[in-house]
Image 1 (cartoon, rainbow, N blue to C red):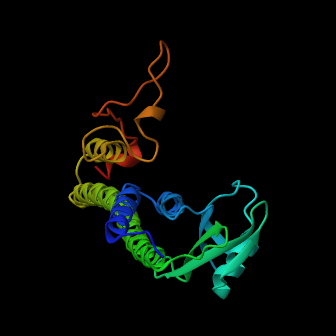
Image 2: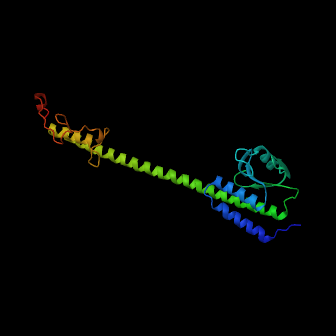
Image 3: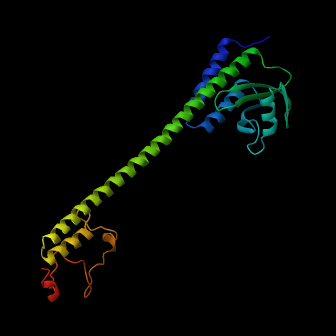
Length: 241
């Protein structure tokens, strides 16, 4: 005869849901879930399996989990399982909606079967775990979308700045073309070309080289050309002027 009461099941379920709700990632929630399930049902082993993979398990060393035995028993809905160092154990299995095709399994030594209250509690824990995993998956997807959106926003800002720089450069080139068509003084045209080549829209040195590559002035050396260039055209250029 069962010695469990409805109050016991409610308390165990409430503690289980509170525990797994504190995790921020799916692996942590699965590990915490199997620990709480094993504790609540006084089982030596608890695991969440998916196909041939053990997603989380308690009762074995992390590097020595009998994955084939656990996955096989969960798939067959077996009543017992023989586990290393534990021998024959009674098991109970419930299907999980999330993760897809996953199952929650508990194994307990001894001849006593899982009573109705324990089976009902295990199903409720399985539903609570599935809802938690689904919620965490949605949060992770939202985080990834936020990261992608922020990266796209930064890229858009960079592209807008490039377009602005190109627009200003085109405007300067258009002015140079007008100066040439209106036969402006050659020195003035050359000065406009130099300024367009070396100034960004902000008015600071830029271009394909950048300000950091402009040679520093040294004694007897050279420095950045001044904005007004004195030019003495050759006789051949007098006619152009």
